[in-house]
Structures are given as C-alpha cells and as structure tokens.
Image 1 (cartoon, rainbow, N blue to C red):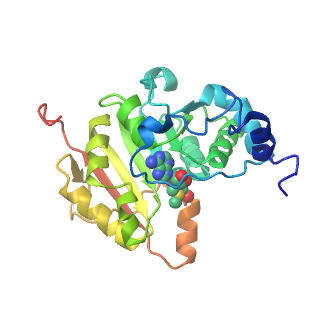
Image 2: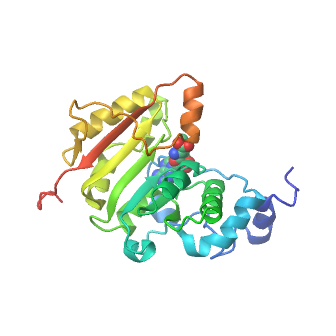
Length: 265
Ligand SMILES: C[S@@+](CC[C@H](N)C(=O)[O-])C[C@H]1O[C@@H](n2cnc3c(N)ncnc32)[C@H](O)[C@@H]1O
C-alpha cells in the first residue's frame, strides 16, 4: 500500500527528506526543535499517513489557519480571531468534536493544538467545508505553546478531552494534568476562565480531581467539590465513543481560574 499515489506521506518524504509538506505548505515535523524537547512529554511522537483529502485541506488552509509551535514568537490572538474570546483545546485528535463546537458557537475562537498530522488535516478539512472561520490549528506541544507563545490572561478557557491516560504506573509522569501544567495554564487563563477536562479512565479522573482540587489557582465549579454533569456543548468525541464501547464511565471536570491575587505570579 505504501506505493499508492494517495500516500502523501511516503511520496513527499521521498521528495523532501523528513518533511511531509514543503515549508509554508503544512506543519513541520519538529517545529520547536530539540532545544524545547528534552523533557518528559505527554504524547508519543508517531508518523502517520495523511489521506489525499487531508493533504488537500492542509495545502489549501494551512497557510491561513495553521501554525507551527516553534516557541519563537508570541501569538496575537486578537488579530488571529478578530477579537473573539479564545478557548484552547489540547489534543483534538481527528477534530470532529472541535468542528462541531466551533459551528455551534461562532462567537468563540478555538485554538486547537495537537501533534497528529492526519488529525490536523482532517480538522482543517472540516473547517473548510463548513465555513468555520473561528478555528486555528496549532502543530506541536501544547506546553511550548502555553509557555513560549501565549501571554498572561490570553485564554478564556481550556479544553482537554480524553487525554492519553498512560495507564502503566511508570508512565504516569507523562499524564498532562499535573500540578506543573496547571500552574503554567493558570498564568494564561483569565480569572474566571474554565478548564474543562473529560476522561473515561477512572484512575486518571481521580487524579485530575485530586490535583485540581489541591491547586491554589483553581476552584471547582461544582458546589459539592466533585465531578460535573456533562455540559450540553461537549459533543461525543472519537476516544469517548471507544471508551463507552468498552463500558467505561465518563467524568467531566470543570474548574475555574480563581481571581488573580497580584502577587500569585
Ligand atoms: C487520546 S487522544 C484524544 C483525542 C480527542 N480529544 C478525542 O477525545 O477523540 C489524545 C490526543 O492528545 C494529543 N496530545 C497529547 N499530548 C499533547 C501535547 N502536549 N500537545 C499537543 N497534543 C497532545 C495526542 O496527539 C492525541 O491526539
């Protein structure tokens, strides 16, 4: 199958070395370079095939709606989204749920980040076909995006739906929802901005509830201090569907950024 003409990955890799797309045409394989990558990451780098449709959407929309997380510049979110409030979605996968939320709420900009190239192409295709001008696709590690490229109070919310559960004990350190991540995110979320997490992995849900409840910058929006009812605006995601098929129970967590005490930075 590797020789099929629609296998854009193989075709272009042969033509351009390790790049799937030429500079400017699409995402870079390693946008931030090794300097930023010497640490434990919450994702497994993988090379995946891009379909012809995903590649076409990438070539058409990446120049305007895509961005590499190179860690070298600060983003002008107002310019990018025309002044809309902006929600960051970390790990959108194939982007179906992202596109649905963008269509349902055109008054919110969604900065969607993932490292998965086929998903980036898929989301750009969905945005293109549905005329969704309020989605931007960021390629690379969300940690570098938050740390190097976003400013204080720039986000109105953050969504982390079905993050990789890293079930083995020795991999727990790779889980995204950890105290250090929350401390970083809290600097970028405006006071009152909500972090919305969802997972079907019970031990991870318990860990999320524990670290979020203990974090000084966040407060649970639920008066009982527990999980939240599933908000109507969150569509069923691809990973959620797989979890439900296995009989897993899904938990949502909604925690707000506390009012900023000027000396808590
Ligand atoms: C289990 S999938 C869930 C995808 C989608 N939210 C869903 O529910 O179908 C987790 C996604 O998070 C992405 N991811 C994990 N860590 C990330 C990081 N630090 N920055 C960007 N994307 C990340 C992975 O590449 C993967 O696509």
